[in-house]
Image (cartoon, rainbow, N blue to C red; front, side, top):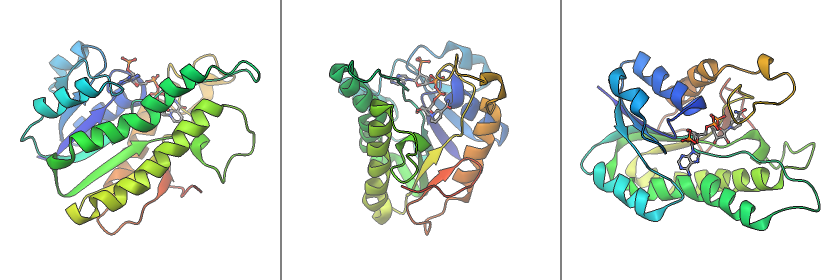
Length: 224
Ligand SMILES: NC(=O)c1ccc[n+]([C@@H]2O[C@H](COP(=O)([O-])OP(=O)(O)OC[C@H]3O[C@@H](n4cnc5c(N)ncnc54)[C@H](OP(=O)(O)O)[C@@H]3O)[C@@H](O)[C@H]2O)c1
């Protein structure tokens, strides 16, 4: 049975991905920021209390996963933010960079030795991090930290190639989660389960010969 690891499995898209992988008979490990108790009766292995901005927590994750081979890992943890021009809080921006850009780097580095040959890493970034697709400006913290996460993904691609581990950057769509709650027309946004099904499909299509790509969960290739 293949083993998949979902980082940021407490709720939203991460929680939906745990269910999606389970439905395809994977052995699933849910890495949660909170206690993840809701997974315990679902046949999902839970590693709780992992804050991906915290070096010690991520070291502890690696210790708890020692000698546990990973076939697929999807890093989902992240935060969205709106700022008012003239009132940008640079401490908050650094916190978001730490989570959105450095979080997946911390995790990938800590678990590098766990990946099987033919393994896969997906990082959920955002279309908002696309430089080529930036047609509306604003959202400095989110755009900049997700653009950095995209750069991280391509750099990890080169890092992991000799290990025969593939890397992809993923946009989940505009999804009805807590992150987007309150947005206009929220009810019409893609459901987390639909997004997770698309993300799973992109992970399945990823192979050792796939070049570094940034893809929408619907399969569309996105500009960097
Ligand atoms: N929703 C969208 O339309 C959309 C669009 C583009 C990209 N994305 C990206 O998709 C990802 C998931 O978003 P979502 O919509 O599912 O948001 P969400 O419902 O707010 O979920 C965010 C997840 O990240 C976890 N998390 C937050 N801080 C963390 C930390 N320091 N360490 C570890 N985990 C942490 C949260 O854990 P807790 O539940 O314990 O707080 C939660 O599981 C994010 O990276 C987001 O940027 C979302």
